[in-house]
Image 1 (tube, rainbow, N blue to C red):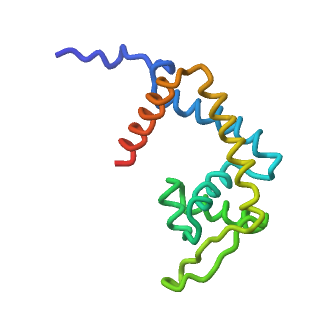
Image 2: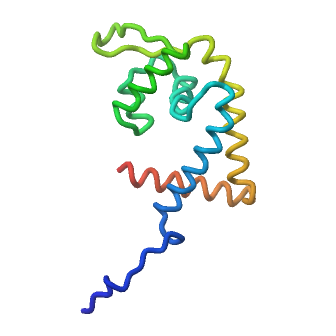
Image 3: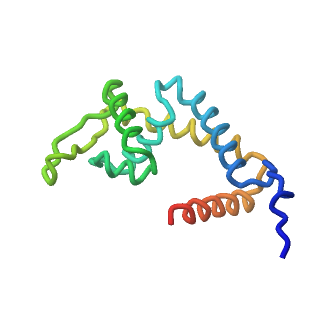
Length: 149
């Protein structure tokens, strides 16, 4: 059996990882531009999406839901508290974990921030038919699920 390993060349255009990373970077930059006027950073927006959906989450809940490092979410939450977006409250079930709640300021940002994200999604998927969009999103979701396992 022959090995053709040394002949294999890495083609960025055929690498799902490279393309997904490149797309994510461009998406994040576009989103960042759109939410900056609201005083938000992308990491704060990701966190707000979870909290707009369900409040009284712990830092550990957010780490699991966002697939990010403990230190990253800790820094993001500190900035969000400093910026008046969240408050932390004692957890009656676990004294070591605090429950995170949104402030009124964070609640009022929901519509504009969501609209900004939708505009960025629209820009990214503008060249797709409705059927292609559906298939593309389904395939990305399957790839994410496969890597989580």
